[in-house]
Image (tube, rainbow, N blue to C red; front, top):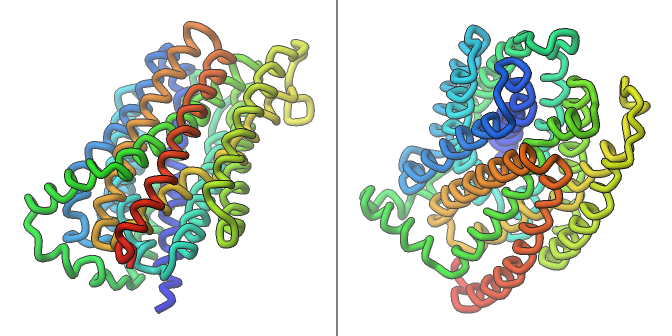
Length: 418
């Protein structure tokens, strides 16, 4: 089976949730303007999103195969559609927190299901890692589109305007369309369910705990945690950096943050082609070294702005263009390591592993955003982004260990990914 329709559904689901999830950077900036919250207080939106992802993933990952991947995605899409249609009629910071909790809970179901479905519609490790990169690149296209969609509804002339909340009516429409498309798609889940259906919920939960103590899974968790810490600390705070450090207008701050999403999407698309032929470990190692170099080159440019009034892309400072290019370099890391661990494990373990990926990725995102928000508040935006050098270094070390353990695991379990 070619599964073209289910693959299309995966791309659209990821596109829609990319807009919703990664609007957090834009919304962090807007709640500071609308509700008068501090940078440290606004940073709590990331935990509302990520901790709900982690909690729901923990609760459902051990038995989501029993529910069914397609059915889980349909539940998530239906729920978030309702929430989006309600959101424009709320005007409070509390409602915004609850919105991101709902988005996170829904995305947990989507992401576990998507990651597990990829294993059902691909036949080899190289196919798996390639499709994973294409899916994640489409996620970044959604983020890119989201910046422009949100900026269209922002009122630069009135910083306190809540007109931007109307965007959720349109997003509710998108999720409804995604629901209807998925409803008509066909997915054969029997391969994943064959062994799982024999287990009780307690046995499934115990299997998850047994998987998490495996050395290769533990070091993978560290890799995923620190990668997402890097990505979200930059992505969530780039609009604020553009606005408060580079002194860009609010709309332009949001729009220019799209460079990060665009460069990440391009990086993942190119990686999807390269990783069919080249060694994933060498590519990721080069990417991390270059990413660290870019931080050291780009952040000092933020101090060299001449103080002139910025009116658009044409006279924006060089730093606004250069630093977001880090997305091009870190882009292949997350989908590649996820694909490697999933394709290394047997099919019936991939649903549980997908849940663990999401849990610890969410914790990494929350940690990164909170740390960056507080460094931003007390030490400034440049110091906050220099902080990324520390997790980049740690991730590089973890990646060496992960590669060694993956090769050892495959030698000792030759049938694991069959």
